[in-house]
Length: 545
Image (cartoon, rainbow, N blue to C red; front, top):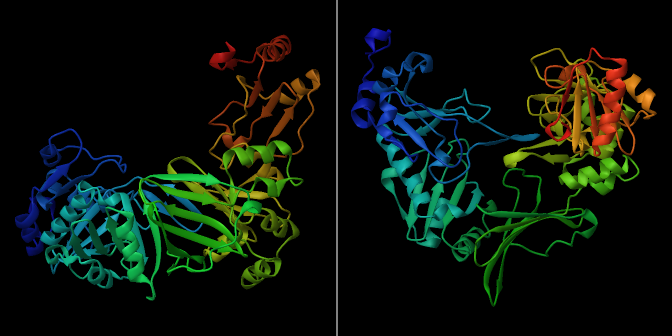
């Protein structure tokens, strides 16, 4: 089969086929052996796992040549490993965004028999990550990850950096699982917990994960980390989030056993144990400027993690944006993290090496919106702020300064304050004339060029040509300067909104859209259009027909 496809007949491939060829599995309602005879993979989610191993199976599916790399040969494909352990591996987090990724994992064998992976659920998916010492150890690891989920141990977790597995194993009475351990992962097991050095994804080899059945056992792990160089964080599958205004934030606790800052070393705060008559709780706080920014609390029952964030951004825009925008930002739960902002001097310092001056619009945007965060579905979020982008390694381009991210690209600010969108696919274009207009439309949900802003109205009508200005003049509807610029225009009254849509949405929406709560208002506007522009086609929303 290899020779027929012009591929090397390397001994490592024969050894992998002998050891794990034909290994196939799925937790979906179908025969896993269908995978070996042409079953299709995915798109993945955290709710299922699927795996197919063996070079022969890939050859039968004509996948071998496309996946081959110099010195390494593919021997399998799978959902990301964290899914086996009951974790969510599909949220790809970077400094300015967290996005739901869709992708599979490829397994590769090297000449010496070691296994690497290429994880397409992550942005660095083209890189090979060392993962297992042999094909057999790979299967042993996957079996151990499945065991974690099947025993229900994935529900409560503690994650620490740097590795502390040996220290924790001694304190918690866990035994080494040599069959699933190698230079890349080490596994310890006890009746009610599992310790793992190295993240199941392979992308964070410096981590230790504690999977436990009770908060009491996690608390003992926290006690064992006290006095070590480790930083840690608690996690739970069930989370309730409460958002509050910064002015309500309490003062931080005076002490804690283990510092926080697992993913961001600059964070301040601590993880502590609270013992009461009802049992043991774990409380993790992050503070800034003498106030708590956010608190994670795991109660004795361990049924869910209570996450409180004193970071609501809306009231900070009172007097800067319209009340409509402030209320919309509050309704969307938009946050602002003061630890992700910078002073005027710091922003100027970040720009100086690139020969770009900090313009007044840029400084104003950092002052008002630096560290702004908007959440989307399934845990996705985007951050805004020039200092955040520059510190994250995003560089100015042609005098444009990066100010934030969206799903498919970046926002930049020009010297005159215009916001420019760059998705890497088409030529950069002006998204908004100023940061205030940008945020006004952002509040309505227009946070990306490919996201259509919403207007809270029951009735809608779309027109085949843009007659917005003429219609607004005829009906006496004033232009909304806070939302309008060279790219698009809005005319708003108490009962009607007219939107002349931007050119960059021409393939997504009609040139002109009307919104109203009362059907009679839509009918009045359409009567004028039919009388003055009978050639236009009109599409109504279902409620407006």
